Image (cartoon, rainbow, N blue to C red):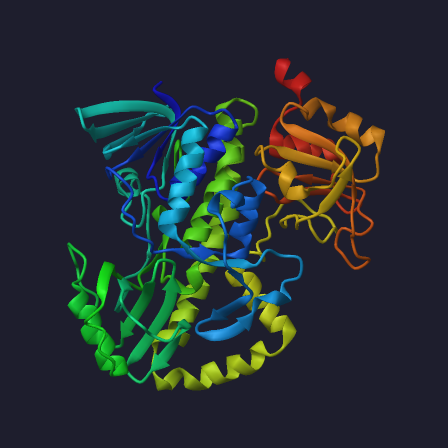
Length: 496
C-alpha cells in the first residue's frame, strides 16, 4: 500500500478531509492536478456552522481578524440571523483562496503527503483496495490505498471513472463572477433584482470589488476558458446603465444553475465529498461550507474503519447522514434561484415570503437552513433536544484547569468526548473501555440558562464532528450501546 487513504482534490473539502484523517493518525496522500493554488475565490466567507467547525479544530485564529455579521438573506430577501441564539456569527469577507491557504498549511503541518501536478487518469476498486492511475511530473504510475475519496469538484474524474449516477437538471442560464480593482460602486451585498436580471456587489480586502451579474435570457455556454471582462462590463451596463469597463479584473469566471447530486456517496472503497457529490446554484454561499462539513462527517468515520477500530458499516452512515443534507441544499438553492433570478411573475411570491419572514419562527427556520445549524442526524431514539444535533459552544469549569475551557476546545484533537457534567464515577467507569478513542471529561457547565437544552443534563457523548450521539437523561439506549455504535467495540472485545 502506498497510503491508507488517497484523497483527490486539494480544494476545501479535500484539505479538510486530509486534516481530519491526519488528526487520527491515518497515512494520507493528497493528489491535486494543479501545480499551485489558483488564487480564485468562488466561495466567500463561512456560514455559522463552518465557523463552529473551524473553532472545534482550533483553526479560527489562523485566519486572523474575521469580519462577522448577523445579516443574511434567502433568495435576496433579508433575514436576521441573530435569531439563532448561542451561535457563531457568519464570516463575510474571507476569500476562498485564504481559506485554502490556511487549510493547506494546517494539513501540511500534520504531515500530509501533498502531491501537486498529479492528475487521476483511472480508478479501480478490486474489493481489497483501490488502485489509482496517475499522471505526475515523472510520468504515469499507479498508487494503491485502502480507500479513495474524490473531492475533485463538479467535473470529478473520480465520480466519472467509478460510474456514480449523477442525476439532476442542466444549467438554464449563465452568470458572471468577477473580482475587480478600481471600481467605486455602492455595495449590494445580498444583490439587487433589476428589470433585466440581478447584480450583486461586495467589497473585499485590498480594494477589490466582487461582482456577480445575471442577465435573464443569457443561455449557458460550454466554455473552455474564462469569459473576457468586456462581457461582464457589457452585461453590467445593460442592466444598470453604469460603465465599469475601466476596472482592472483580477479574475473572471462564469457559472450556471445546474443542479445534480449522486445517488450514493459511497461505492465500495470509493467515496465522494463536496462538489464531486453535489452541484448547485451558489445561493447563500452554502457550497464550500457544505463541502467542508461533508469532510468533517466522513473523516473520523473513515479513520476508525481504516485503523480497525470500527466496522465498515460505519461508513454507510456517511451517506445516510450527508445525502439528505445535500438534497436539502439543492432544494433551497433552487428555491432561492427562482426568487432571485426570475422576473416580475415571481414578485407576488417574494412579497408573501417577505411577510412570512417577519415571523420569528419562519426567520429562524430559514436562517437555520442556510447556516447549517438545523442539521439533525438519526443517532437513536430519545427525548433530549440535542440528540443528533450539534453541541453549541459551552463554557466549562474543570478540576484540571484553573480557567474555563469550551466544548469546542475539547474537540480540537478530533476525538470523541464524553462530558460528565455531574461528576458521576459510575458513568466514567462504564466509558473507560473506550478511553483510547473518547476523551472522558468531568466538568461543570458555566452560565447555562434555565431554558437551555443543556439545563438538567447529566452527561453528553459528542462525536468528533461535534454532534451529540447520546445524552442523559433523554436517550432511550444506554451509554455502552452508543459508544459501540459510533466508536466500535470496547478494547476488551477487540482483543478477543
